[in-house]
Image (cartoon, rainbow, N blue to C red):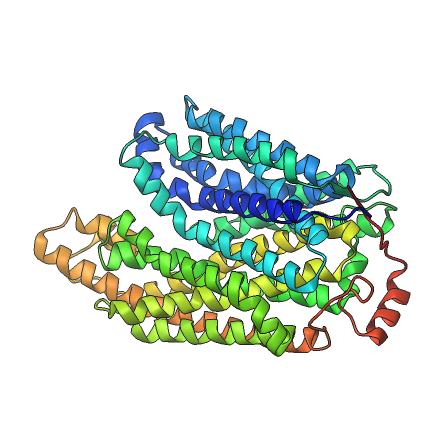
Length: 531
């Protein structure tokens, strides 16, 4: 195995961080552009949903396949292909002449983005071989990605103040071109030298299963349970079961499910999934709180997300490696989750229609800090525990689980908010018919209905709706407290024996665990090619 130069190490880190930042910004930057996009392209309500979700669906559908592909054709090669594809598809998205082509371009942009995450994490795993360096690199990557999610609305708002809606996508192009040149010069290649036969039925099963499950969950959360949505969700789940069964019979599977018998790996994925479940719905609920309860502009709401992003950067990049060394992995993850749980609880106490901004933003920053500590350490544990040959596919499995956790969080915690809101809201007397139904359905519906009512009734309706939403938000935050504490319990139970420093020989297990699980799972390859 060739040695890795300092320039290659930190060049890899810089490219991974910048790419993660851009992709995270792309997840949220579109939100502010939709009103202008609607004016120019006149999409239907269904098309708007696909414009917003097509990118995320494509990423979720193809992560597993792209993780395998990077391991086999080379992670550098796949990352460079993806970077070039992101530049091209960003341009197509920016200049899409109608809604139909914009949806296609967004899906293609998501497919290109799916190449990046597993390739970047696989390269980090292979170039940062020392424990402390790898933990720091993964923490930086996690922190920068968290920063990107918070920056999305700010970047979008700044661009839309001066340019047309396509500018939010076109700004990707120069960044990708610089990354491509830097990648050619600095990235080392790494791959699995084993079999390279791609099983296309597995690709179809994984993509259709993941998209079916996520689509059904999101649709049922937004529009209620309906036969078509329920059938799609069941079919998606069946396809995923078929995918898992097929992998166990293949000599060269997309994911080696024997890895899940390693407690450190499976435990970290479960903790990741629960953490995403607990935090992702809060970002959506807070966006509604800022804009519909406090009546802030989208730009102000975007600024309100910065404390969480800053906390995420500090937690992932600075504190996670330090806490691993001080406390060990399981306890450090638990500390992060307890901080997050405490911050969720503090937010529930502090949030009202009149707030103390300093205390609320401090709680939001602590939420980002605690969860980023958790996600950085679990991500590092996942990468360190598996063989380097399977770093791409293993990280892809983790990212896919996180996507499912996020979808479940939006669906289930979003349903909690809707149910509590509908039970708590009191429609003022004198309001009947469609306005009453909209007020009783959601806060957004209440604000819309109020615009059509006389001033006195409008004020009463909005006040009642805001009060009910705040009550629902409190319950939602307490649910996140319970989820974060449950994730902490999982971490202590599954990761307690994982050492601070995970060597390539131990792969994150005690000697007894390694012997027992290796016997059950069969031989896992330990070699890799790096050039």
